[in-house]
Image (cartoon, rainbow, N blue to C red; front, top):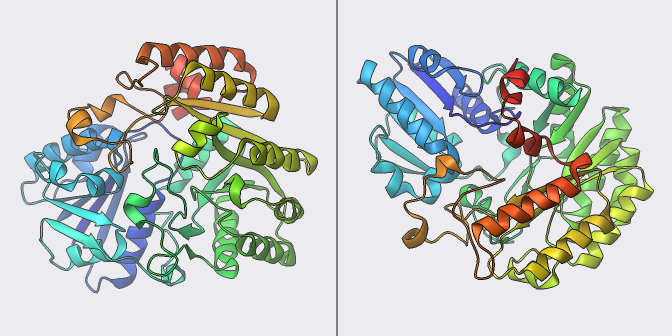
Length: 425
């Protein structure tokens, strides 16, 4: 059986980790002969992908909302030359709006939720058009992501050209315990419930076994966690740090943290374990907006967290969102003041996008949106009661200009698209 896995076109520097897990699971559990290919449209041309997927029995696509249209286009082109190819779509967008996807030419089947077990059933003959992915309760049972399959070296080289570091990312848990209205994270792994759907954690031993193995193989000099919220509990963080210290494994690293779960003691352990950077979604400087978006944090706690990170010499990156439903100019001024107060080394500011799967999505209002023309930084249609799309873009330009010496790479690329082929190499 020939299986091809594809990540459609999107501009980022991170590996297709989810497809790496699916590929590894399939290799571990499928009893028959298996030929597997992988293509990532940031690196591979459409022609290369269509040619490489020719004669595939199954072609799997992992899609977000901005990448779905390109995935469907590739599927149609592949089926034109290989009519028997069975096309499977999974990920955030297909899980959030499966009927829309199934009604799209080129799409044979949609996977809802986590993909490992569902894709195995498809490889074994399941041809139901809608397949619910049963979650793996103990994710320590999953094989490590197949990084050779997803050609992780390309992403590492790309990261090196951007950051000067040979780095890649790792997953330490599934299920985010938060309910932020603008986020679709819970679409795939499910809504958090302490009893029926708790946070599922990779043990420190197993996680560090994987990180050390990958670090040796790919000669890493840095790593990061892909989890939307890494520090879901103090116990998890401290256990990982203690084991990393015990092993004498000194590789620098970074993580996405949520202020609500952060303590000074946590940062003390992270620093001792050579954490050099935290990335935090601050979103807004307005207490009103923070409450409305169910962020679960206060301005005061964010200030405290950034202060602790500064105390321990950990680089601080702060990310903000504008255009939240009831936001006013006064709220945006509070955000501007918070950026000044936090003084992050890196700053990002995005215009909210009501992606399918978020609480902001309304199919009657947003069903006809061309998601391919949106990304997490900007769009041409979102407005609020108090702010037009032009107002939001004006504020975004103003804040990017004001904090230009510390804006994210994505902001720089938005302003200079010629950087893309230069970075791609």
